[in-house]
Length: 259
View 1 (tube, rainbow, N blue to C red):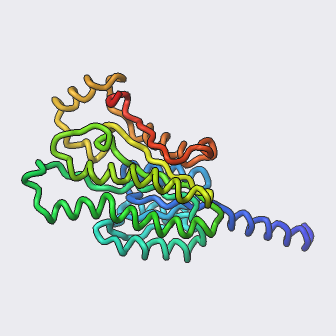
View 2 (view 1 turned 45 degrees about the horizontal axis):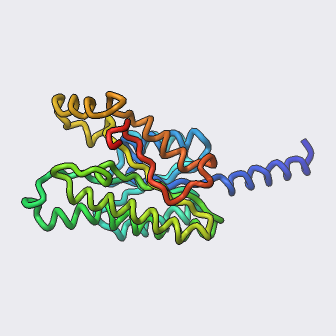
View 3 (view 1 turned 45 degrees about the vertical axis):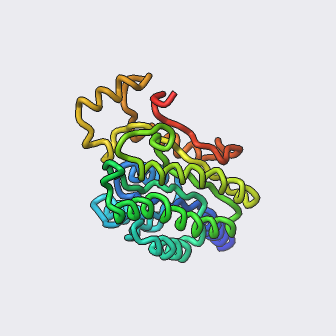
């Protein structure tokens, strides 16, 4: 190989690295966030993820993908850490092309007995912090020529369920936020959509009793709970070029339970 060829190869490699897309995944250490992180890395993305604490997955992934994976500790309960996290991502990767607002906290309790501090915490974690994270990421997206934002909502925002009214309020807020933001950011070639999962096997449904699980399955036209892989498929569709003309939409993936 000649010196010229070597130089050209080096420049090509550097250029490819410079344009490799970057995804931010909140709550990317387990459950749906973990699956999304794994799939994005496998597809050649660079991924920046955060959660409150590290685990075996974050440590192993950082070792396996030292140049393509970043994990930081950040807490949705402290919205200011969202801005700090995005600053770290900007310094490390220089751009953001995709944000998946996946992290959230479900708390079940009758509204009349829910303490004010718990209400404040649920709204901060499930609505305020994701909004602040989205603002910080969108600002960086505008400098990179566009991108996509996918907010993970819940069928609680579509159909009322007992004991989750505050969580529902936050998720309904995210769906409304999605539609309004799509109007604002379309001019920057940034698409904003939300995924509305039904009941699927996850940590949030791990405590569902067998009796209630059977009731859910009976009410679901497809007769079963979803899988985390099926929800990830829908999220990644909204993040992909196959949905380039889709924005401001809430895609319900629930086996038909809300139809």
